[in-house]
Length: 505
Image 1: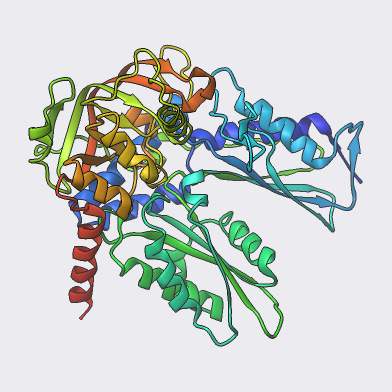
Image 2 (image 1 turned 45 degrees about the vertical axis):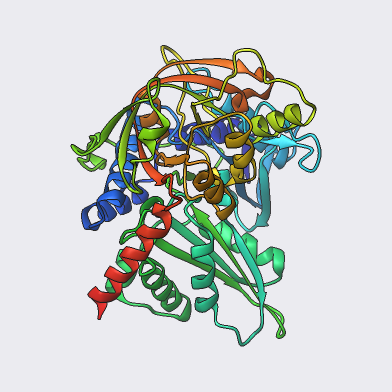
């Protein structure tokens, strides 16, 4: 009988969460490197270069790959011959103790993103607990843990349906993927669960994302069963959609498709899709009673020799002297390097601004959006000599409902976020001759290198959702929606879908 110490389990969880915060799985790095080599779309290739450069910088600096350091999901298999030594907690409590310890590491504090009372006050728990834990009792004398830190941008794009037995799964998936937009930060992985009941299908989709990327090997040897045939078919057809990195249009949208299935009722065909983003983070370890789990870091040679540099055609923009006339000259897909001051704000800050205006009150002293740009971001706290921690963009569509207010009532000139904008926001941008710029999701540490100073100017109680003022220097962005309402997230995929179709004909 194996005896496992409670503290060894807690420390192993904490160490795993620190490890995956700054080390991509190497299979993911290799797949991203392959995508970079084969990509023909300049915009998509530039985005992948930023993601790969960011990955290496995070490994070197031991700082988070993404500012969204995730909600923790753990699959724990406990052998029936395991005995716990002096345990005062149950398994879920131990995982949560590991989360609290791992996220509070003084040299790499991770962003607290979990809120309690989700249907009410949505109060930040401050330590990223509780985790979502799935415990299974199995044969054996070991404890196996598969743990991930799941970002909100990708999790929010999950899809589920109760299909009829005769419905085509491939057709449904191909219908859903374009609806997911780019907020899940492709290229990444799709996890698909088929069968069981509603909750089982979703759980299968999530669990499938714990597997390594092996699509090149699978295609090389050929499918050996129906699920492998489905994986290959979906991989090829999804990439033929031309969505590409960050939704800019290109050859690689997914680097793998994972599928797990389970027997289901004769009248049912539940199917779930959950994507993993460009900040894929997961680790697997076993405890056998010998102590804390160990994790082997990658070596510098494991990273491709890709060093992102700004395109020679990138236009330098001084935010402090920018005019409304100048922004009307920008076209979708243009690359810009921003310098100067911009304010930040995301969901909670926008809601608070709306509530203030509704009551006829003024914005807090020192907060003036007139003629300025807002960056949708919730940064990680700084450590050591940093002015701010990793500060990549959050999904812009969540702010669509506030866009007309921000442009019409407080004079905002433009916005910076990630992924596409919805029709409501695009109409407001076109109406007010504004502009939306897109930064690369999954390049948070690289973006933070462009931030020269940061200070909270309002709503400090909101933590990472407070309004900051950043001073940036050569922060890379792409024009997502121009003043005429033209969107690169529509034009880019259209162009590359047609190019892929012609090449395949």
